[in-house]
Length: 481
Image (cartoon, rainbow, N blue to C red; front, side, top):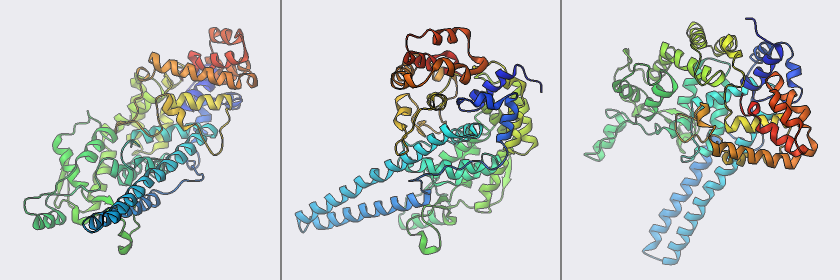
């Protein structure tokens, strides 16, 4: 593929496919943005580490222990109520004290995870891979506004997304559907087949009570994760897949007695709906856990999944209205390679359409924040990353509010009030660091050939260094990618 002006390709590579150029990065990219992106696909995906980062299993074990303490104190208070009011009051106070420890556990974990992710985004030398990791994290979204998900969202991304970003789509799909965060978020951990052994036992002990399945995970797997709402599935397919996924659960606090680590994935055979199931025209015999794996792998390989993923990638990286030739090219690569993601990415960045229409995508708040820190080399305190800023500008980390994830169109982010918030923050940044940054020199180094004469002129004639920084961050070319 022959690309246009080299200066333009370097700017597009850094700002559209990366996370915003750092000073000197466009010069380092040099003559070919495409080669720079291809080189980032070599080697394993980067890992994120840092103090305060724990596994999901470790966190769930601590949550289990706290919940057990809360329950024990409540029972002690209830038992003492008929005997001694003072003992009952003490028990209630102890239960409340234990309950308050739950957010004291969760909040520092969330801040540590979100801070580690942010620091990595700002400092990484492989920003294309980081953008891909965050794309997939949003595709397989969980949201921290539900239950204990604030403690698990970061470890979920580290355990079920990042290891597979340069792997195969079907492996990532299975890893996400098995992860405790997804099982809790979509309420699958207690989904029970109505004809399962566990359900029959419950009904035997409690006549008239018949446990059932939860369809949340199955529905989102079909609608949001694989074939899409236009992929040809029916309600019958949702029901069948939900039966297939019964028993996909999480090991409880006593699982260690049976050689299982608490807080890890556990297939509960007793809860699994027996019998074969038909999903999207294909019959799957009852092979327990493997039945679910077989369905997920076939969904991952479905032509509708290839087109859905290709469309989302083209929308995210190229334009709000994904160009049809690029979608066709990426979908074909997905199908031909059986979901090999590096092959898919090479088809994406090799599409001529990916290098046209510079600065066509309006940045999300996250993109704007990260690119500002990268471009201005803003300091980040090691012990306290500015996680609050994402919420201030409207995109709290791992909090899309629904399984659909954050929206990816410019119209979702370019409203007047949202723009005003960015300008106000840009002004505060300018006041704070303006005298220590020369925006006149930085602008072409960060935006390259994308920088317009109008923006260059406005920055050059700013009344002060502080105002020049504000004008750089508020420039249309900086607000877009």
